[in-house]
Length: 165
Image 1 (cartoon, rainbow, N blue to C red):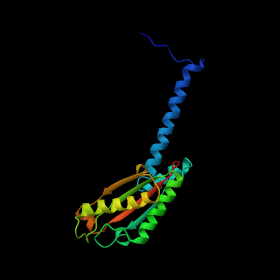
Image 2 (cartoon, rainbow, N blue to C red):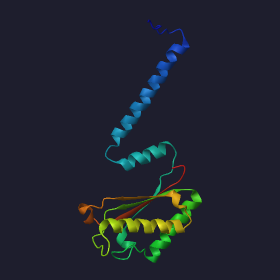
Image 3 (tube, one colour):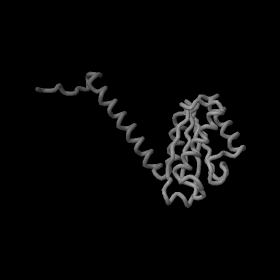
Image 4 (cartoon, helix red, strand yellow):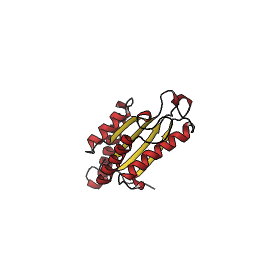
């Protein structure tokens, strides 16, 4: 079977070649962008958001010791009000909230590190839901609860992402 040769006279024959070349250039540009920002994923994320006109998500990074009673998963009154406010604002914007626990608290008394990290993440999520955000819009994750993470203590990171972001 013999395939027809490409001719420069027909517009349909070279159209696919131009589309393929455009696709290759876009892919090359993306790979160069990834390589240029290889060391800093946050900078890459911010650059891509800016390129597409999306707002950066609001991120709150707190040490758990300032939010909870020592060794417990009970939010302090000021922290509870803060997370309710985040939930209220997120509900008004139709946002999604990601609550992430990083590390574990060495001062855990009646819980082990995993249980305390999970209970604290759940307590923050409940406070956000009390602010009016539907629980289906709240995402939870717990990471880094191994022995090495005990030295740095527990951090809680709350990220609010709007629909456009």
